[in-house]
Length: 147
Length: 175
Image (cartoon, rainbow over all chains, first blue to last red; front, top):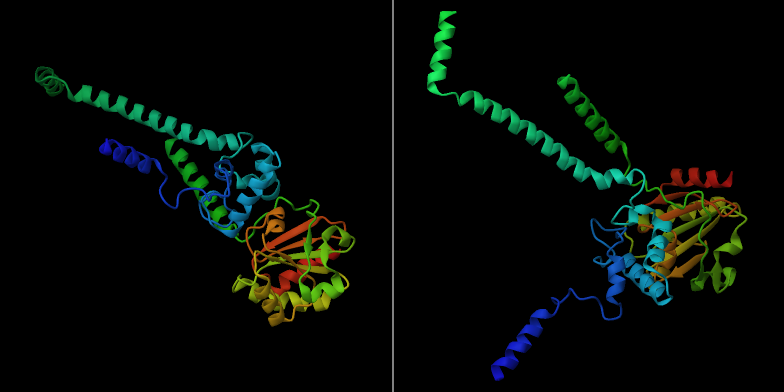
């Protein structure tokens, strides 16, 4: 029985987030969910959720206040876009030239697949040429000599 | 035919590379350019209260060109380089352009030390949370917004501004 309790507690301990990774107690995980969609303006490759820069801390606080005021996620994202432009969004909105960004990876894969397919066709053709049996090869050589 | 295709790709990549090199990473385009400057109301720092009152509301001052400068005492060296330039320009343009310093995410005592160090005489407001900075879409400090008499943002400068650049932009909003 004692072992069972110990095992249960160990399992619970494992289920906890790593120390330092959990959101501060005063802000709800929902704040961090929205903050993760916004780029930290003063950082390199960090979202407002991850960054500890003063501007990110204040942005998280503003998100929490807007949520408490009943604003929707889209309204909050729009608030930041109106001030920083679409640059602030981690996922560029699917419109206009942005479609290029969304399709570029698929286009890249398609180009690589086409190039690979062409290479394989060519390789198979060569293999087919090289794969001639000795008898036929001798026949070809004999004919060439005759000419 | 194929050779031309490869040549074309190299040329396109070369042009893109050249274009990238020409871009100034310090030149941050604000989405607020040619839009009304966000209004704000903040407490005035103690040494400026006698002349400017307890609180400063931006919209009360529309009607003259305005320079809004975001700074902090912890912003070293950029804000320290910029402060004497701003003060000199204020002495020159006072009466024609209103300067407002927004002390951002700072401690009041440190901010007062900074202002005392440079003998800053134009009004200073205190924004410990940095809410107004986010409203203006700032990336950091120092940052300056040049606003015309109608309250429209005409340009933004990120980083420590030089005397020449400052004067050029002030003359632009005074037009």
